[in-house]
Length: 183
Image 1 (tube, rainbow, N blue to C red):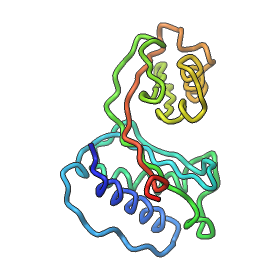
Image 2: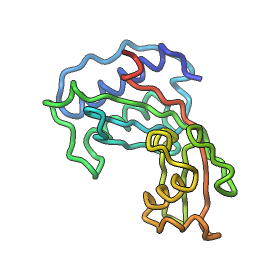
Image 3: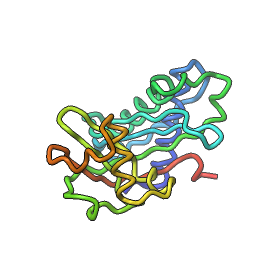
């Protein structure tokens, strides 16, 4: 469990990493040396502007400490999400940042093992993989079937691909926090 002070620091770290990437001025957050900031785990950073997705990039696992992974994913979400043009100086201070710190994955047998609002989902077939964060299903009001079908689509697979015995379903939990939570 990440403490509120650490969440605040990680969000400041993410914003500073984005600022450095796009050439905006931003002071780095003061250094704190907390053990939880050095743990290794998967992280996704989501950037929104006026409530609309503006970038989201992450990794399921990382060998880097959490604080470094957050910074790297924030910079990547700001500039390298292929779905969007990069964040620029004009919009930098208007975007909102959300961080999802992932648990390890575990394999599930099917729809009955997926808890909407609690589990994120990975669909994998050989080298093809799609991931949706836990908050996505809740935000869209999806049931487990729709969540799995949408994750298949994210992987570039047909919606019913999850029924194929070669397709593996994995779930994970995430500790999700963002700048919007701090207001």
